[in-house]
Length: 120
Image 1 (tube, rainbow, N blue to C red):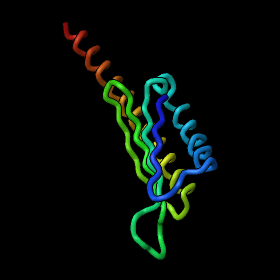
Image 2: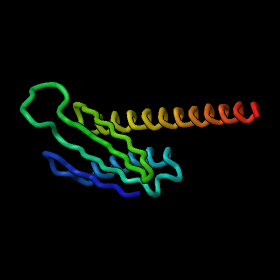
Image 3: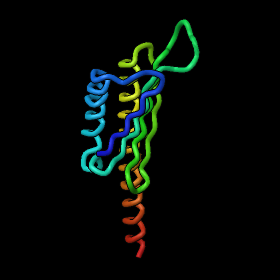
């Protein structure tokens, strides 16, 4: 697994790095065997501008797996840890949906092939 982390508008410290690694390991466990070839591109940082209230931090996670699989999520939060958690949850949601859609496609195509074979 190749992890590339970019910090925007703040300096990364060991606590944030450890927290981020812990959250990415959850996603890695979900990927299974594909995790060995996957590349994680993570960007965390402070939003530009001088907003007095609202979400000041963001986290963006991109996963690229050779063979065409790609997923990207972005989340904002009032704290950096909250933004990282939201991005992790959204990524897991997206990966589960893709897995379910792929399984449905395989099931439907297998059934269509079986119907074709019965006609002959």
